[in-house]
Structure formats: C-alpha cells, structure tokens
Amino acid sequence: MTRHLLCAVAGAIALLAGCSTPGVLVGANAEAGCASLAGTTIDASHIGLPSGAATIDSAVFAEPSALAVAERGPTPAATITPAAPAHCKVLGKIAPLDPKAPPIRFQVNLPTQWNGRSVQYGGGGFNGVLISGLGLLPAARYEQSAPLAQGFVTAGTDSGHQNQPNQPPQTFALNDEALLNFAHASYKKVRDVSVELMRRAYGRGPEKLYFAGSSEGGREGLTLAQRYPNDFDGIFSRVPVIHWTGLQHAGLRDGFATMGQGWIRPAQVSLVHNAVLAACDAADGVADGVVSDPVGCRNRFDVAALQCKGETGDGCLSDAQVRAVRALNGPYRFDFDLANGLREYPGRGPSGEATASSGPTGGWVAWWLGQAAPALPPQPNNSIGWFYGAGAIQYFYARDPQADLRNYTPAAHQARVREVSALMDSTNPDIAAFHAHGGKLLMLENMGDYAQSPYAGVGYFESVVARLGRTQVDSFFRLYTAPGVDHVGTGAPANADFLSALVAWVERGQAPPKLELVEQDARPPFSIRRSRPLCEWPMWPRYKGGDAALAASFECSR
Image (spheres, rainbow, N blue to C red):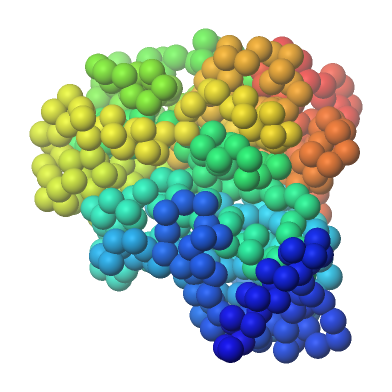
C-alpha cells in the first residue's frame, strides 16, 4: 500500500473506534511532521462545494521570528511584520473544475502550540494576491500579538486568480468559475481545506473558527455569514464593500463628474476640508480636527457656500466642481432592482476630504480625484475609484474590455448587472441562520471613508434590524463607527482589540465591552497619540471635558 492509502485506512479505523488519529505536528519532531504534509492531497469530498482536489505544494517548518517594521508601506499597519512563533507554513492550491479557470491558491499556518481555534483572513481590492495570514488583523492595535502568535491557525487565499503583469486586475472576471470563486466560493473552499489540514496536523478539528477582513475582505466576511452560516463562529467585518454593484457604478459616475472642468485640484481639496471642519468640527464640544457627528454635518455643511462668484481659482469651486462634489455626496440610483431589492447606493462625506496616510491611500485625492483628471483608458495617476470602477464595468458588467464607458448604461445591461449583483452584493438581511448557529458578527465603518460609502454598511445593519428585530440583532450583531477615519485607518483613532472582544462573545457569552479606539505611531513602542470611545451606531463621541486626547473625556451620545 502507498503511504497515503495507509493513512486513509488508519484514519477510517480510528474514526470507527471513536478516536482521532495522531496529528503530524503533535510530538517531538514537529519539523518532520510538517514536511510530511508536502505533496499530499485533500480529496474534493472534504470540500463542501463542487471542486477539484487540493494539493499541498510545500510544507516548511518556520522557526520563531521577531517583530520587524519597514520604512514604508501602502498603509501604516502594512509596515509592521509581527513576531511569529514556530509554525508549519503550508502552501497549496485547489484545482478548478473548468480547465480554463485558475486554481485557488492558499496559505495555512499551523502553530506548534495550538489553541484549538483558527482565523481566516480576508483579501482586498480585486484580490489576485495570496494573503499570508501572518500580519495584523484589520484595525488591530499595533503592539498586539498577531493571531498566529496567540496560537490560532491562520489562513488566507488569493480568491482563485493571480494578478498578471500588464493586465488589469479585473481580467479574471471574464471566466465564470473565477468570478464565482471571487464572489464567494473560494473562501468556503479554503475554509474546508484548512479544517482538514488542522485534523491532519493536530489529530482533531478546530473548536472555533473566525474570519476577519477589511474592504473586499469585509464583504467576504458578510458573504460567509449570509451564504455559509454554519461555517464560522465569529466574523469581524471592517469597512466592507457590501453593496458592490452600487459602488462600482458610483465609481464610474464620480469619475465622469470630475473629467474636464469638474476635476478638483489639491489646494481646493484642502479648501473643502477646512470648510467642513469650520462648519462641523466643534459640534461635538471640542475643535480637534475630527468631525465626530458626520451625519449631523450633512445638514451643517453646504458646498454651495464655496462656489465661485466671479473668477475661478484655488479659493473657490467652479460650477462643475460643485456639481462633482454633490454627485459624490449624493446617492447613485438604478432604475431596476438589484439583489435583495436594493436600487440605491448611498453617497459619501462630508469629513475626511484631505486625510492623508503614509502611503498612496486616503481622502479625496487617493480614492476620488487622483493626481490628474480621469482619463480613458484609466492612467496610473488617476484615482483608485476610477481605476476600479471603470475596470469593473468593462470586465464584470459589459464583459467587454474594449467597451466605451461613455456609452455604458446599466439599463442596457440589466440582465448582466442583476446577475453580478446576485453574485457579489452582500446585502441579504436574513442572517437568522448564522444567529441560530451561534455566530457573532462585529462590523466597523470608518466615517471618513471615500473608497466606499460607510452608509452602505449602516443601511445593511438597519435592514437586518428591520428583518430580525432589534432585540435579536443585539444578541449577535454590533455595528460600530469611527468618525474621521479613512478607509485604511488614518485620520483619527481607528484601532482596537476586536478579536479578543469577538472571542469573548462567541466562547463566553460576554457581550462586547466598552472598547476604545486608539491612534498610534506605527513604529515601536507604538505610542498612543490620542484615543476615543468606540461607539455603537447611531451614537458618536461627544466631548464632556478634560484632555481631548483621551477617550475618558468623551461619551457616546446621539
């Protein structure tokens, strides 16, 4: 018999006897046990969706490593490589059913000292890059140990396609199976493969499974709660691109609004930002550069007050620029129903217009305006929103890389728009099955976010309340908001220990405590510059007196 067949027979006998097989990482020689996983396969029968088998390409034992901090990164958190314990790093792929579809690549990290739990990490953007599961979780405090160092098995995936040089990141969507994997199937498949790897590594499956993701990864987390309610016990969803179809179409509209005379120069971005602060900053009781009540600010700030009365210049906005701001801050409406009956994507702002971060992301310039007015085809100096939205329309909805975006209308592609919406939009308010499973869900929206509208997440939360009732929702789902924070977590206090709060809620029934958001230096010793209370929607932090840099000087209010 081959080694694999012997292992399968031994495993079957052990299961019949009511016991588990010894795990390859359990014992004195974990390094050899890790290496034994390389070259093995996981049959498709272990995967709860139609799938090819999973192949383990490599399994390498990694010695403990110390914390490291890079000089630069796309976000402050990305500069931090947390310390890692001894673990088995497993790389593999799940074969597609369609031979023309790419495989689903994954990484699973198996610590030698396991706490019986796992955390699966979400992706970002259009994915296409393997998520290692070795970094900090979204919105984690910088000095915290990463989940792997806490004893969690961690996992990540590229979602079933790999970005290729000189090709738009949306190209994969022309293949149906690759699109299905990106929409939801890959995360379920990698979850099932990781569970089987845990059984082989430790001789038993996980006691609890968690998922944490931000942006696209936040959408993935909500998707799992909606589509696969029995697969995860706790989910943290940060700034989710939940209403995906609405966001991509709004991105196209917002790009066209800033073409030509509508484009807003950097000095004018600062003009708007400062006008918003003048109108709204002190409304919470203290002028500290943070708009704590962005909803109220919508009534206090009118961009028309900045409209040029005569000659145009950096000290005012032209008629076209005012119209562009109103488009960004207003809803995008469809003429037909999308998934779950939605027809409207909410506007963004005001607040956070001139937020900057250590990398290329933050505020209007990164997400909406870029360094130059939108071009056709999109150029590297255009905004992320235009680059993403234009590409999504061509590859997902028109399904034509050469489609003339100037002539595109959702109505002309209604059937396809509705089809993609059913795949991609994580807007189903019926998550009663996730609740019945015992699942807990934490969601965080950053209210200075221009990568996506935080009000889409707010609208989703309110739809769940309308569907299930506030009492039931309070028992398993919390929505928090972070005023003044942009998509990647800069501009105001943005970080907290969400994982510990989620674990305590799932495993000990302890409802989330009063958490604090902190704003930190992204370099050791990760000093805290200021803090705020983390408020549940619809509350926001109101100043009550004392040091404005301390959370204790604020209270959550309406």
